Image (cartoon, rainbow over all chains, first blue to last red; front, side, top):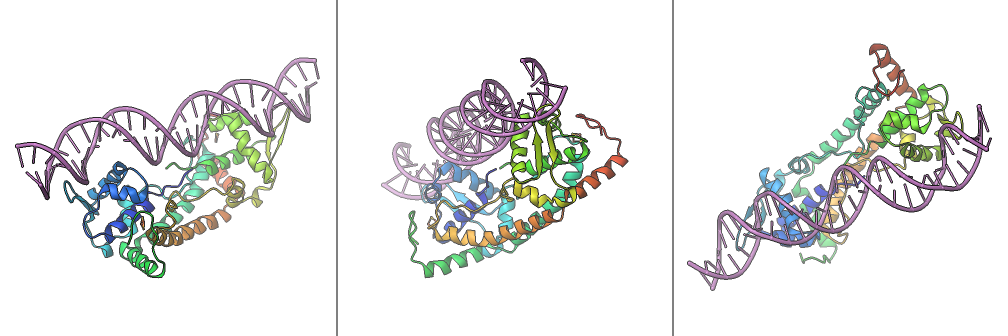
Length: 151
Length: 151
DNA sequence: TCTTCATGTAACTTAAAATATTACATGAAA
DNA sequence: TTTCATGTAATATTTTAAGTTACATGAAGA
Ligand code: FES
Ligand code: FES
């Protein structure tokens, strides 16, 4: 069982894009995320379909945010990523006819749904803008020593 | 990202053991779970260390519950399984020096902790006994047509 | 126009986990 | 002393995620 850090990673990308003046290339973003440009393009390509980012080809091209920082919540991004399951635990579904399994699943599903609902509700209340503000606050306190680039 | 159904699977095992008169062999349990006996022995071996089940070798051997159904909660079992992460989503930790990452992680960690706490709190209130009662209720309503065995 | 740069995507490869299997030792009952 | 079942290490298989290569498309600049 491994944790999916795609949401976290995408936030990283978006905030870095918010910081930048112009478009940012997938190569630059890949540098920050220590991964391959194609991976970035795949991820951001999905977000573009949802209208969160836009891209431009050719000289001076790259990626930029398509919406206002205030209007984008973690939940929006979560949806744009395909709303992957939020919980690492799940129900067995291999023997649907088994009454034991039915009883187990019924009991756990309630708990799962409650936890998931709580998490997604929190996501609604976190905007890119609030993250950006928090970032600025941190930048004032610490001298940034980011390996990949200067702020 | 795949969901871990170990908890669900273990509950299945334990309830089947609760139903049985004597010890149940790992082979029989493997049949119900459509897996290999060694896999069962590995999982139950972990639970034995926590005092949830006990095993006997040789003729007439197998696995049985070691504690009262009322006294075992989902949370106990979760702990006995090593308390694996409950959430599928997680924080990136690849660039700990990055201030953007710090801001993102700080914001999400709160939400993660809240959701996890809620789920585990629910686990505390579900006992093996309550699951067993629910199972009996279902058995009365439906005629059991379990492929692996009769109840 | 022709070169350069960057995205868009499919196909492929690599790497990492999770799961399953084999093999054999240990100990208990018949 | 044979049979049965657990205990466990080592191995193999399967599945899933991540990364890479290759090349097409289109935009800007020389
Ligand atoms: S295998 Fe679960 S009820 Fe029979
Ligand atoms: S790479 Fe994230 S702050 Fe620089």
